[in-house]
Image 1 (cartoon, one colour):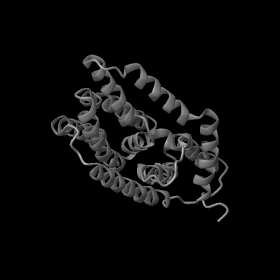
Image 2 (image 1 turned 135 degrees about the vertical axis):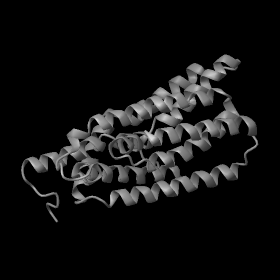
Image 3 (image 1 turned 45 degrees about the vertical axis):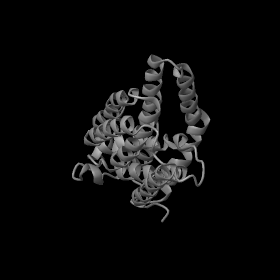
Image 4 (image 1 turned 180 degrees about the horizontal axis):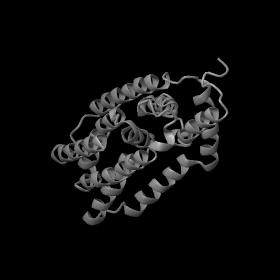
Length: 246
């Protein structure tokens, strides 16, 4: 939960700064900050991805998960929902402008792979590094949103507490399902390691989006986070070593 609290704090600070700054932030500053966040996300993704005991496990998980995600088209669903809410609440009067700020900022802060990956890590192992990266990105976004849309941006912080806190709590409740060796710490559990490795690959894809290198439907890869621990569980069930095929 610490990562969620940090994220909440940066949005509050960013929102207040945005109200004070208004629309005076240079575009070049926005560009370099976003590029920096993208590079750090890339490094974090690579460092998580290489922890796998067998590259075939995240490969299988990503292929199966991405096919499921593409068939459902999670990415399209998120975008359609966002556009519907934006159109519904984008009106000129102050009350509707407040609501628009709240809805748009909430979508920006809480709908995305980094929200899910970071909250799961925080809930399972207490590792809040991904949410710390997200906190910087959201704090900067809050400056932009607050300067453009107003005080409604600050109230989106409540959405962060609700969504990310809820995911972290749920991940904590699901811990027993991810434990295969009671003598190992949570972070050292094979199912958690492979889940983290898949998450790392997804982070690399997200970084490519942030850096505007290649557009990837990252949200469609999210089912792989469920598939990876299942693959490890199946291998354990049949007594197959994790380094099979190597």
